[in-house]
Length: 198
Image 1 (cartoon, rainbow, N blue to C red):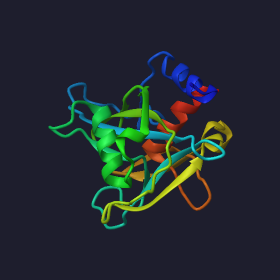
Image 2: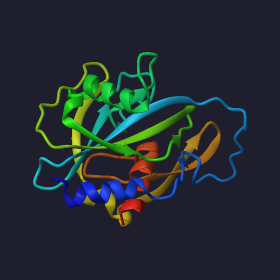
Image 3: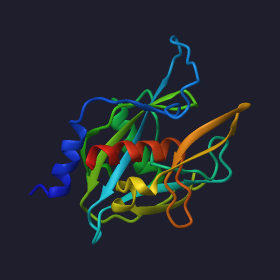
């Protein structure tokens, strides 16, 4: 039986296509029109097995070359063997945190998000209705945790901050939660979902 939350998530996916990017808060950045973006998929997994819905996130290993120690959704680039970004997101979630693809009810995906690292990321939205044991992938995932969905649906919890990057001041969204500093693309995609749900 479809829950009220699932119905709300499906309605959110039907909102007009409004793409997001890491440049949303930096309108002075001029992007080359012929740039080539690599496809990727991440899984916004809403765990509905808990007393309150929660979104699963990871803390990347501090030993990684790219984005060490940052908070991210399970996911990654689309490999040659992946049918599409949805398949990539499910495969990566299985590899990174031990989430079996069969435990995820894929509802659809939000509009693509462009990152400063040259990816076009499809945020795949799905619900988890069966408990599973998280198994962080050694060397890539330092920690698997979850955030109450209510926390990231409250736009008052989002802040705009900035830091210097490649010689320029770059502004970005952040939505801190306890000891976790959720920022950049992950925060922007969470905010895109929140805007569609409120």
